[in-house]
Image 1: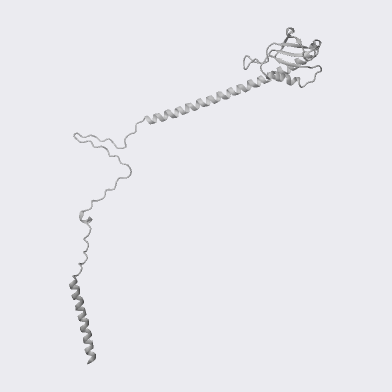
Image 2: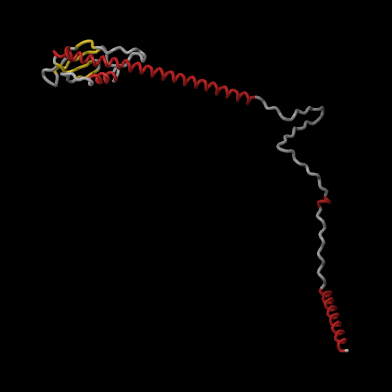
Length: 228
């Protein structure tokens, strides 16, 4: 099927231009019938035109109808020669008029849909371009901020003649706590008292002996008093 020359061009009706006798042949349906060929001004634009043609044709019942088909730029059908201009030609032209009208409406609808799609694509492209510009602005702003040098928090020290430059001290977190020095006297542990030395074994024996003597003497004195 041929396509329209331009997508938005107005559809021109498909028309019958001739009865091509050079193609006429015997019909397989009956030996009295012939296959007649009506030549069109062009091939139908696409499959929708034949679909519309047969849609209208099937909506009516006409006597003496036989086989009919569309091939390239021809409509061929089985008929008696005397039936062509009285029955078949008017019947075929009605179906063609319907197909042309409906296909024109379909073409306009396709055109409107195509324009709506193009408008949607243009709108989306415009939105994407605007988004690109905004992103570029943000990226350029970030790059400018990153290029600005950061000034040191400590002021620059003026160099006195002959003085040794002192590097600034970088302090992180709270200032360290400096503890006062502790004298060695206070840190020395106090002297611990030594445990008494163990008594000599002989001295312990004499102590026990003297205690026994005292006990014996006290017991003897008590016994003498009872005897008296």
